Length: 424
Image (cartoon, rainbow, N blue to C red; front, side, top):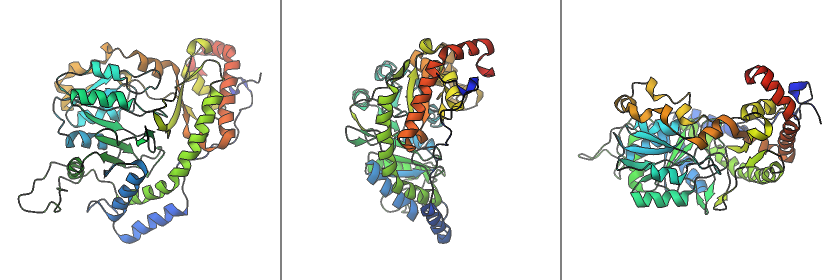
């Protein structure tokens, strides 16, 4: 048994994993094209790069209508507003996701209703979501997390039964498919982030796929300072406008996004091959629980790979595992905090109308979300996607490190007991 770096041993991985984002001459050519055009921003909307990017994005992901936005947070707010959801309405969101999923309803004037997640996927638990529905519930935002997709069969059945709008949060799911249908095209809206760490990136930006032309027109008006995007161009006398703001995506981002789309199919294929290999190899490590692939998810495309460790087997929680992995050269993360204990989600510190008016709806101390709490505080480990772009050796090194941690678990547990996690 070899010693961990924590005990003075040699790291498993001495070579750096591939950097992200990837870039080459094509990005420079695209950026130069925009600079020379003189059309740098997002107005008039859509510019030629933006229009071409949206067409190419839909060809990749599926769907008929898409709007380019400033980021993948405002996309969800815009979707809610386009659907007529606002003051005092309730929107169901999962407890295990980035804070933007819960913040977006508040920006639209609605109340985020936080529910627990499924232990097998860490995505929203459809049963918990249905229990939370009241007469004020107007929408549900399922989040496709890591390499998993939410149970869209169950979600759509619930939405039809209760007449709810479905906004898929696809920030992790570019290229993913459920029963052969692209993520973000199953519900009424699909929200995608192009932020710099995402697997399809333009640095910043977002895409909102809309089910109908009417919703797309409303969403386009909202992101373009209220200008109508109905047929006729919105300049005709007596034509309706909307209350909007400048949430447009710039032409530079669209141009970079187009290059990212060129690379994307090969990247998805590479990650998919390696994630299958990871599933098989990591399943042999004691104390590791894989999140099983739902066979209805016909294409896996993922932001990061998530699995769970058993703290009772290891003698410590996931934060120690991630620390040891990092020391051995394996990029990883413990993941998000549960929404009701999330440092980045503290509505009570704001003066936003929703938490000020409905403080009882943000009584986080009395929320019981055991699965999310377990994932966030004890068991979830997120492997960086770079591991899956380093070939079989990249995966082998990550798995070998998990075995090394398991073999050293007793000594590591003793060190944690003596020093505490923060002093490792």
